[in-house]
Structure formats: structure tokens, C-alpha cells
Picture 1 (spheres, rainbow, N blue to C red):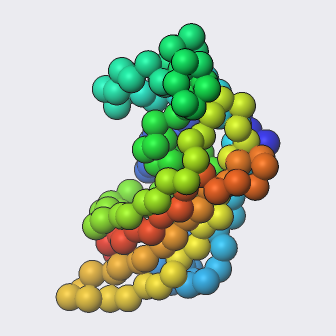
Picture 2 (picture 1 turned 45 degrees about the horizontal axis):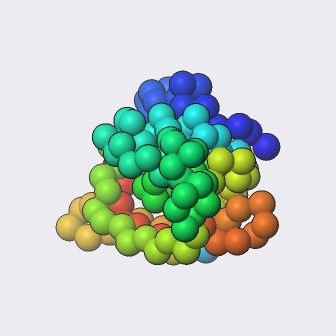
Length: 160
């Protein structure tokens, strides 16, 4: 299990590009290789600052305790960072040149500091339209209690 630290997160998507799965290696229905990560209060606060969200639910424990949530929670969009943190360098979603065509997410319960999150991800379909390579994928994040944090489906145009 990995403790997520944003400063250690690799953001050079060209690094190790030759190790990424190619279009031909994307197999609909095949589970993507993932690893669990543990979320910290520091990562939640840092992520909220980076996206410009100063909601005290994300960084002020005293305030967060007075809310129905009973403590700090993560912004719902943290799943974007988690998707990359839970996957290795070979994951096809990391390919430079990937274009996000859209996504739809459902949120069940908030992620919290100390949660160990696991992603289950798979390609649902892939097809070619007007000489572009499309992949439809689905991801689900669960915590250490096997509770579903969020699920989502996305559409991407893959690099040639």
C-alpha cells in the first residue's frame, strides 16, 4: 500500500512512454493493474488549494467536525489524482496525447484522511471513428471497508 504524497507524484507523462500499453493492447473487459493508496489530510488540503477550492471541509478539522460529515473530507474531484496514483507507469490512461472527451461520475460517500482507496478500472469498449481511436472506460473506487466512494465512466481519444 502506498501513502499518497502529491510532491512525489510523477507529472512527466512522457517519462516511460515506451512502457505504456498501446491501442492494440487495450482489451475491453480486462481489469487494469492497480495498487491501493492511502489518502492523507495533507494531500486533501493540498489538492483543494491546487484546484482553488478553499472550502474548510477540506482543511479545517475543527470546522469539519461541526458539519454532518463529522470531519475532513476530500473534494469529490480527487478521484482524478487517485486514478493516476493507483496505476503504474504502464497504464494506457497515462499516454501523452490522450484527449478527455467526457466523463460522468457518481459519488456515494466522501473519501477521508486515512482511507486506503482501491481502484477497479477497465476498458469497456474501443472503436475507431473518423480515423480516431476511442476508448470507453469505467472506474470504481472503494475504501478499506469495501464501501464505494465513487464510480465513473469516461470517453477518451487515444493517441495514434
